[in-house]
Length: 341
Image (cartoon, rainbow, N blue to C red):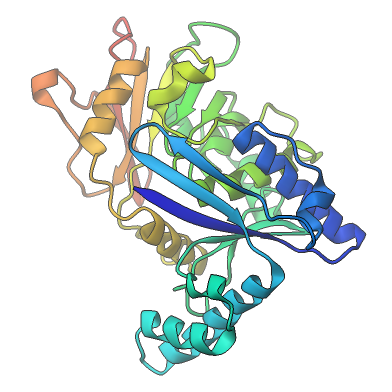
């Protein structure tokens, strides 16, 4: 089933928005393998960029650039929707009214799609039914995030202990880790800072785009003097061989589950993820795939009070776990390992 994503590049002809267009061009090149001049993404007299991306046999994505008129209609729809929701009206109905009043453009009639906006400070992701929530923007240079990296490390961060404790790399100097569900990249960054060579996978196109942009900005930053996670082409760990990768030492898997953290930022992120992804229905199949690929260990993040995932008929059951406070990290033996877990 195909899914559509829109992107918009702030197009005023100044240095700041040239930076926005450059960021969009970088993401476009990584995503499609094709180069595009940043100026081409800014000019309203050129045809908008669009591409169809085939993700295996199960999904097709359609990425389309929108112009300023459609973008302004989309924004107006969100404002109208937020006002209606504050009065108790259903969001979908508010969007219909907003579309009717915001623009006569036929293109604006299809507003129920994710939108990635490239601005001078990077990419942000918004959905039509977010109400008053601000778009989601990733910035690994935030002081609070850098302080967490400095305070953490291989011995203090539960995810790093679960993934790396007691293991030595089979090849090279760094433990090779696949982050199978990279999402917003936080665990990938923690593991990379702890000394792992991280290969990040993400199958949701709008999430992939803002993560790609955030990692591109981090690569130019002076704050990260360690090898950053390497974001792979849009897809899953099933595609790793086609990306020229060998089987990793460890696979880290974070399936969607109800988040207990009550912070506003986490709530916003969960709203986005639930709209884009919904509940993970293939956790057991994904676990079986991961165990069949990893040469040493698979780590699965779970709610603290949830039963561990298990496929006893396939000999897949938890070997041990690391307590993460509000969550738990369950560890499984990779089928390629020789008793190392």
